[in-house]
Length: 72
Image (cartoon, rainbow, N blue to C red; front, side, top):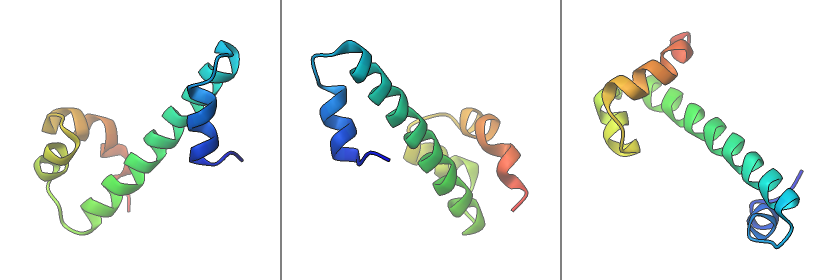
């Protein structure tokens, strides 16, 4: 598994194939981290509105994306 620093270097590299693969891996990592933190915030009693404000999206967007993780 690559570190964030390695992925960052690869994403900024001159080989488009390697760079795009690094970007895809970073995207998956960000999605995973977002989901984990949304679940943690909901468990802590945060509203969808509070979470959406921190993520810079609408309440509807964050709810639609993460409501299936409510089975905590």
